[in-house]
Image 1 (cartoon, one colour):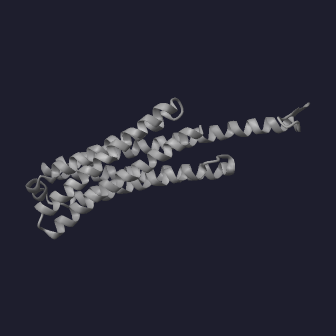
Image 2: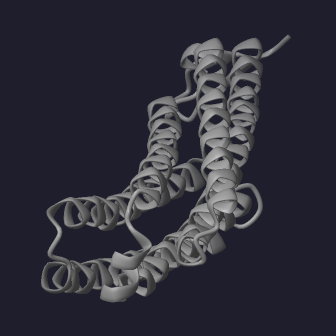
Length: 237
């Protein structure tokens, strides 16, 4: 097997070049495998967010069975997301230093796990608010809109990760759209907070709804972090 000269004239064994090419191919395969797991994770989070979006209406209808089923479904999905996060942690650990940006992949998986946790926490607190309080203050509409916007943001994340392996430019464009949604959530969060302070007098109810609204806003920020991480992954493929 003949040696090959590099651009400085040094001789490189052909076997070394083959090893470099093989390692590069393995890295790409490992990244694509990790992205597939992240895609499963975001799909489940999207389903949980959609369940959360049904909760205000179920509460207004006083549909106790529907509320219970939604909470159980959200809890189950959170467990599935946690399982996927453990799976990707194991897989990244198995390939060792093969993936150059493995920290970004792990941070993304853990942040997505946090988003699932936010959905569970928000659904629990929201389900303990009195429907009469939401109706009289008309905060049910504000909360519904905030949740719907987060669902839209998570849907964009789902579209971004689907584009990573096929259309990097489209992934970057979708990431800009998540920023737009995140800014709209910030505005509606502030409006809902002011309405909450003006319309709700019960301390217990005020604190519960405050936690719900803040949780949605913080979850939106986590979604933006995931969006940024997806773009870093896109640029590394």
